[in-house]
Image (cartoon, rainbow over all chains, first blue to last red; front, side):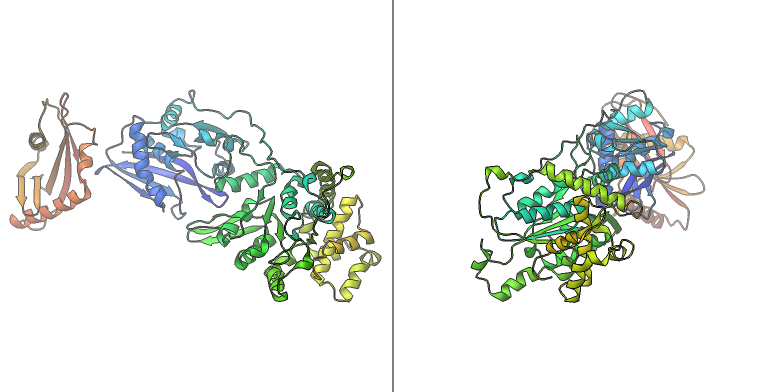
Length: 503
Length: 125
């Protein structure tokens, strides 16, 4: 008749919360009670744990057993508590030393035969363990590489319950330690040289990549909108260590990591289909919300192809995440926050019939207006670079080979470095994040330079917000050209990058 | 705890043998057995005994091995509820007034080739 406790981790978005699992074995009819807000998958742990313990050759204590998961008010979801539940019970039964469970987090789902199955969200769980100063974590072998991404915590991989129990009795034998981290194979990103012509649009993609600006490409089908968008991630700098952990944590919670090389070091590219629901885009689901496309594209590119076909509700739902750089989703079991700082790339046809040459359009004027009108003003307001693409007129000449990704990327990286050092003590890292008032006051440009904007404002050709956007773009153009301040040419060129319609 | 030798038994005989052993055991710890295998329409109680202060209603569960679980695991919540109802009927029939009552489980393990063990779960339900 005794008491023991073990530690597991509950996931709340991409944050982990340590959960203490107490086991008590007392007199009474044999049976197992579980308290502390378990969901269905966790209530079923009762049967999984029992079968796994018996099939690992241990006695199932014929007593009244109580398992308490605390904090009791936090809803607990999923099967990752199985291993900790089993160990707490066996420790309470005196089969394994209870003091070994102190300072140790146990993660993993048990199969009926005692094998350990991988679970989602191992990375955030190990991070949570480190935050509270727990030095050892046992995870299923399949998740070992993911757990090993966290420094300062000793992680062990186990294949079955038996192995864990043997290791708990005798720490000398047994569990697998992580090997040297293998560099992730960088995803194959198609090269920019594949795109025919489209000098303007290429330039726009380069500028958007350099400044972190959102981008809208419009044009008839077959002009290379989708090709350009897919090549944009190739221009972005690799993720820094903290960014890589943030991105990997989101993908871990979504259950999307590769087992052998889990760390994501390249900016992700996410292209949801235009029939995607609001929940698929921003995250959702019952109980606690799961991350959506906008969070999976965190620190990368969210590409919405045929954006005019997206439901208006889906597009509107993107507005707040884009503004705040995170999404907060309230569901039955609580509010979760997921990071959502992604770069938006939109592609659309100019009208429903979309002929190669715009003069052949047969759409009624009202249909044309309605088509792109579905992109609401507030959303387009956040898109700094908007270019119309024209049909390609020749297949390219041998002497004018288009620039390849590597060359453009070098310029983009230099421009990004320049922007980062300029905003280094302000908390922003790209020009797109800098609010308008800062550009107009602290980084005010001489009137001679901003003259084109003033004129356009005066004539009512741009709005005040449009003027801010032009200023931001002008800074990016200056960074790309290697100047420390924009000149009047940069400002004029910036106005040219927003030539879709008259907005 | 009590140890004796048991041979191979059929299921009905096994239960009977378990009840014998349980009665012996209860007498051994100084309880007075009032009824054995008392039946009414609602069911049966294996043993009703008393220690002089309270009434002790015992369910005896006998198994020849733990392959299908420990003996005590065979006492389900439905069975417990039935025993409570029958205990009330026993009190009415014997015109016993208010008294303290305790429900115990005697888990008897009779392996074909080994010592018999009797485990006494006091106040099991």
